[in-house]
Length: 417
Ligand SMILES: Nc1ncnc2c1ncn2[C@@H]1O[C@H](COP(=O)(O)OP(=O)(O)OP(=O)(O)O)[C@@H](O)[C@H]1O
Ligand SMILES: [Mg+2]
Image (cartoon, rainbow, N blue to C red):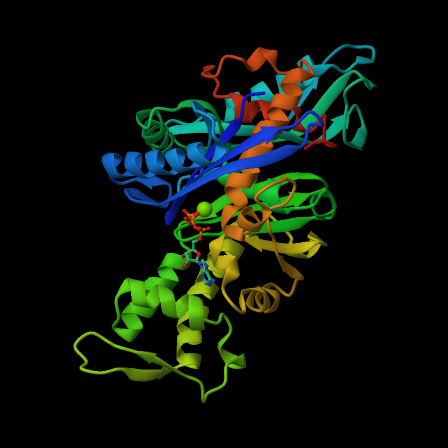
């Protein structure tokens, strides 16, 4: 079977991850390549040639490790222009109850997509949730049930067209064909959330270098998808500014001595730094460092809370609490800070559900890339079940391509989603 390759173009690193499915249907990671991200910032391409070089070297490394030639990839997409909405709609089917089939659901999805179209944006995913069959609410999977009208809320996610096109261009210029595009927050959630958490209600936050991606799951399906254009790099820059040191030093100090909660750090703890223009090293309090970190993190969480509030999310209904992932989830004290900030249980999410190279990929920084190969794998599975053929045309005009497909069928095959 052909390998599945995912490309995650992060603000700090580009990852190429290669997965292969064995005869039991299990997904093995057989190659990984990583390169520092150049010419990419918060999902935007800022310099094409540098971005292409970063992708090319990540792919080359992954290819050498996997021992196979890579030609087709799935892409993770996120950025400041990402936004989601839930479209509610009803389709009348017949005067007498008839069996609900895929075409009825598809009609609901297509109508939600039509209504969500917006100039300058592309719809990347449309996932039905909360079906109502005639008067019966809470229908999880309507396929095969009888009804004369069906209603659903469809979760639609879109991103700015140029952000999408430029990201694609980088990968195409690196010599790859694009088989599918998935939303990075949805991919990260796929890698770290358990089925129980999705059912009970959970907020997944992927805190990277430049972006904080998030997804809210409730009753097994996605309620809100979003992205805040801030992350660990903002913290590093704050430290550099506050301590008058360069970015590399600030990054090292953050990773080695940083703490997300200031009031638990002992006043007496000191860190050595060498500020610009100083002849020799000086010391600063670790507590001050933690204060700088905490202020920025609280700002990010405030923005996140505002966004969730504006989308009508009741955090108290998320009984499974919060799962944090992404490289910045490794910051000491992060879990405690969020637990205190949101007054909800918080755990760090490590990518799960793949075999091989565990010691490498079980790192929050790989949540998106692991989630991408998992999503691609599931789509192929659906393909084999004969559901997917309608969307073989990768560039169908309504933008429901591979990623849309998985969204479409998600509600019907929850067990494998
Ligand atoms: N041990 C650590 N302590 C604190 N921060 C860390 C640690 N390890 C990594 N980070 C931070 O994680 C961030 C990188 O995370 P990640 O690799 O998830 O980002 P990315 O995917 O490249 O970027 P993005 O998704 O934001 O575009 C950096 O800001 C880095 O400083
Ligand atoms: Mg990332």
